[in-house]
Image 1: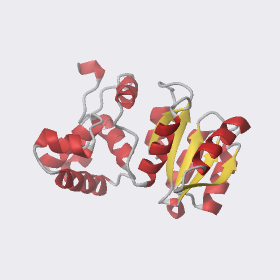
Image 2: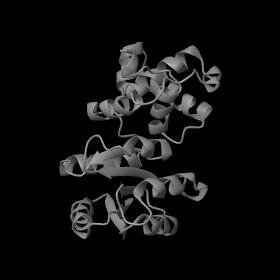
Image 3: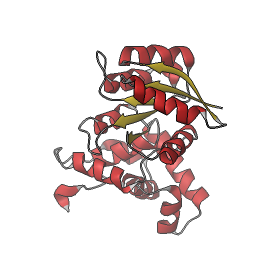
Image 4: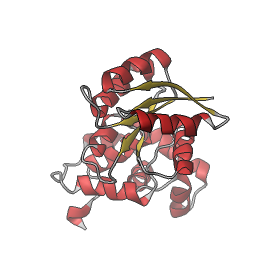
Length: 221
């Protein structure tokens, strides 16, 4: 069973998500939280597989709650999906930097929400849809052009190439097609790159690709 924690200050939103997710044979909602402090406490106590985390909550917001959970080694296996009302929420990029595994807009289709929970629980990141590519590019264009990061020196040329493709939002299958290799080989390159850079998950790999200057966003297009 995939254990899910719901963190949102709106009771009706939590009730709707619970009804939808509990109806699935492989998903169980194990807890709810109405603010960030409660979300962190529940995460420590319940150790869910996935947390659906609203950004805007009273007191401790979802952004800081995400940072605290992601930085706690005891919750290393907990994956966080940020929930936002708008596709281009100003806090989403910071949430990805802080350790979130992806994001969803609250009015997403029910089947997409279910797919997202299963995908994140399996270790994937919600970073392939075109809306996420636009999101990352949008916030990257607001930053100063980064200097090349010395951390890239630990990567082989192939691993840099693969990380750039991850940064563009490509899946392992799409990377395999682009590089004319097998999906298993593409996955291996992605995994090795994450290990070398100490990336918690694929989402952080995307953020690092932009921050290091490996992927060039809008100001150079």
